[in-house]
Every structure is written in structure tokens, then in C-alpha cells.
Image (cartoon, rainbow, N blue to C red):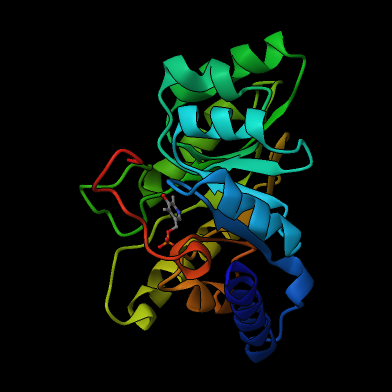
Length: 233
Ligand SMILES: *Cc1c(COP(=O)(O)O)cnc(C)c1O
């Protein structure tokens, strides 16, 4: 079941790449396993998946302990400063940095672990009140402030697009994030790479790939709908 879903998602990513003249090898699929049991993650691993995304620190840590260390764990959810210490040595990439204060905490924890921690800057492209992330205008000034931190490495940008019925409605959002990354890349700043664009979820990842995503974060499309009703919240 999970294997079939994974293969379907990978096939669609490939097709989106072909439609837009891209190399499918440029796109990393992050399997978003939040709220799902380790048994399902093991199933996905058996089908070849090695990159997983979680949005809660505690859940990432407990799954990290329980599962093989070959997994690459991505922190994709809003991150509180007092919790950075728990994932500083575990997260392969933090997708959700949207303040200097948070980056400074990541810097401190990176220094403790003698590790340069890769991050993305979360941009709230559509300006939704309910979402975290900086505005398009705030992104460059924030990056200029974070760039000098030696134990933090900016690798690119991330966005969570609005929930829409027709995924095509999010095309301008993805195109705007891509343009922003091109503009920032053009500044040639020290310690700043713009090679990762994390955008697209179950509902709209194909459009995101067509618009240049290099990472898509797919949960429901692989593991099925999430149940937030009971204890597994
Ligand atoms: C839950 C989540 C996803 C995956 O959402 P689906 O619609 O299930 O694919 C992607 N990105 C973030 C930040 C999430 O919290």
C-alpha cells in the first residue's frame, strides 16, 4: 500500500519534471510521516524511502531513537527556540527558520555539537495571517543577518502555499518563491546557498515541481489521511 503510493508520487514528480524540462534527479521527495506510526515509516523504508519530515520536535526525537540512523530527518514545522537543543544533532535540515533569534539559537546549539546546521528560510509568500514565515520583502534582510553565523548554513527557501481547491492557483506562489531565490542567489553572499526550494505538498506538488521545487513535502499522498482526533495527535 505505502509502496504503491510512494511509487505513484515518484512517477508524478518525474512526469512533472519531464513536462517542464527538468531532470527528475534534482527533486528530493520528503515523506512527511507526522502522526504516523514507525511501522509505516519502516514500510516506506523497505520501499526505498530514506528522507522523512516531521513537524514536532518530540515526535522527531522519539522516531529518531526508534528507527535506523540511515534515515535523514527533516524538521518542517514551526520551531520554538527552547526546543532547538533536542534536534541540533538530529535534523538533516531545518525548513522553518523565520527569525534572527531562532537562527542565533541554532548557532549556539550548532557550536555545542561542532556542527554546521543546514537551514531554509520560511517565506509566507501569500501573506496569510495563519502562517509562520517572513514576507518576501523581509527575506533578504533576514538572510543578511543570519549569513555571518558560522554554525548555520542557509541552503535555500521554503514555503507553505495556501490550501486551494485547484492546485494551479498556487502556481504564482511557487513562481514568486523561485524568483526570490534567483534574486538572492544573484547577491553572491558568503555562506548562503540558494540551491534548495522546498515547496509543494500532496495537493500541489506537481505544480511546485513545474515551478522549480527541489524538495517536495508529501504526507497524505504517501501515508493516507491523518487522524488528529485521538491520542496520536
Ligand atoms: C503536514 C505537512 C506537509 C505534508 O502535508 P500533506 O498535505 O499531507 O502532504 C508538508 N509540509 C509541512 C510543513 C507540513 O506540516
